[in-house]
Length: 148
Image (cartoon, rainbow, N blue to C red):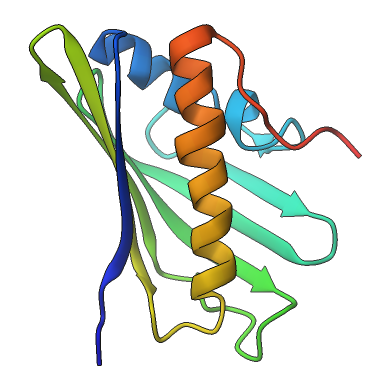
């Protein structure tokens, strides 16, 4: 059994504080349809993508310029046999300065290769993290899901 959590890292020229602000602007890179607050400890917000994915995240750790962690408190993935695969997992953003650049390391703790959704979810995260979030940090413009 592999048990390898999904993780990906990218580097940008912006400051750790700019990366932290962009991560907390979840509507700017994940979905314009996010419901709830996303930037204060204990905040809960809901992501929904059509009828395929709905999840509620709680902000459980927030260290400005360094780290953001969400706990998935509820999830419904209609395209998997176990629709609650994400429930109880954690989504972590670790931010570190490397010279005049900033590394952002994203890890979905508990999203492992044994999950039915691993390939689809990994592909989704690659788009949102390495594409949309990276773009939001670097240029001020992400590619979030549009309001439906």
